[in-house]
Each structure stands twice: as C-alpha cells, then as structure tokens.
Image (tube, rainbow, N blue to C red; front, side):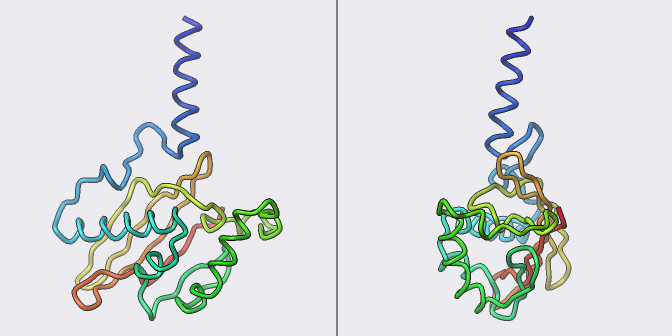
Length: 167
C-alpha cells in the first residue's frame, strides 16, 4: 500500500514539476469549437513556443504594433519597447545573477520572470472583431492567470494586450 502512495506521489510531483496538473488542458489538446477558435489557439501556441525559446522575432510577430503589453509585472509598454528590452531581460534571466532583476515585492512577480512554461486551461471569449483569452501560465509549481486580448488585423489575429493577474 505504501508503494502505491509513493508511486502516486512521484507521478504528481513529475506532473507539477513539468507545469501540468491532472485535469489541465494543454493548448495542443484543446479542441476548438470553431474555425476562429482554431486560429486563436494556433496563435497562442506560436506565442507560447516563441516565449519558451526566447525567439524575439517570432514572439514579436504575434504582437500587434499598436498593442500594450505588461512587462516585468508593472508597466504596460509598447511592442517597440519590448523589442529593445526583452533581449537583455531574457539574457539576465539565463545568467547566475538572474535574481538581481526579480522585484522586491512578491506581487510583481509574473510569468515574465520564467523563461519557459505552458499555457493551460484556455477560456476563449469571441466578440465580432476581438477576442479575450484567460489562460493559466504554468511553470513548475508556479501558476498564474494570463490575460490576452486579440484583434483581427489584415485577416490575421494579433495579440493586442498581454497582462498578468497579481500574484
């Protein structure tokens, strides 16, 4: 009996360490209810992959030029500011000195401070020309709501706003 509990505990630990919990719906497992939802999920997967790889060009290609994006848990900034700020920020997060950039106040730690993670359990609300998505960002034990707004621009969905719930 003890072996069974140990085995279950190890499986749960492995799932949590990988950023998933039983019952989480990964973007790749999400079943779109319409063609539009399929396009939105495809953009979310591209955004997730670009962020996880710190691929600045692919990351920025998901964002609208006129959008506003949460950066480092506090300010809403432009795509241009992300273009100049993210490479140095990501490089610092990869270095042994990464804790230098962490905010002193826990409430400002957002998914920005994790180099990789998974977007799970999407809730998609489609309006005529805009979309609001609430999704959970999971990285190891860290889980936080991520709010994403999109608009159709030239027959393509673009992210117009990225924000995080307060921790």
